[in-house]
Amino acid sequence: MKDRSIAVFCSGQGTNLQAILDAIRRRRLRARVALVVSDNPKAYALVRAHAVKVPAVVIDPRRFPSREAFDRAAARIVEAHKVRLIALAGFMRILSPWFVRRYAGRILNIHPALLPAFPGSHAVRDALRYGVKVTGVTVHFVDEQVDHGPILLQGPVPVRKNDTEESLLKRIHRLEHRLYPQAIQEVLNGRV
Ligand code: GRF
Image (cartoon, rainbow, N blue to C red; front, top):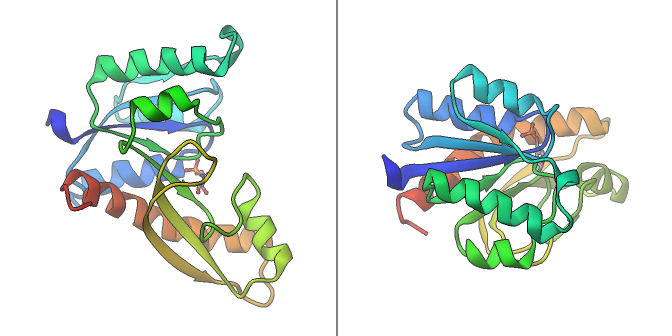
């Protein structure tokens, strides 16, 4: 299933990685996670990968003199696993223009807001503070700007009156876990 192989890049909890793995197990997503890459040795995503025997590689950013040097190491690992698509799932590093160009049209990202509103790493808090009545989830192709690029899928999440960052994030996550496998499926099916 080489042409349906994907790499998932994570830095943290990896609940989206889990959703992808679960969707594959339930045959809702015809794909194979060939590789998990993390820049954080403590990422719980690594535990999730080990649990299903998916190769997981930690690349320590401190070992590299520049962003591009890190990305070149990541690319070497990606090449070795022959993946068709790279799914960023809570990967907290900005990718270099070199990496983005090399994998143009083959990198997806999921963001917890309706882009172009609320880019950045505090999207849920920012949306709540702004007072929007609806926020949501965006899956997009990655280009050289942060949280930017052609949008593949979006879904709304209404903000409730008493929402806290935590309660809103919980509902956003629920939608993310449905949308990301769906978006990956669309790309792998060549429908995009
Ligand atoms: C998600 O909310 C995603 O939108 C954002 O980072 C978070 C990752 O969560 N880019 P998890 O590690 O998949 O649980």
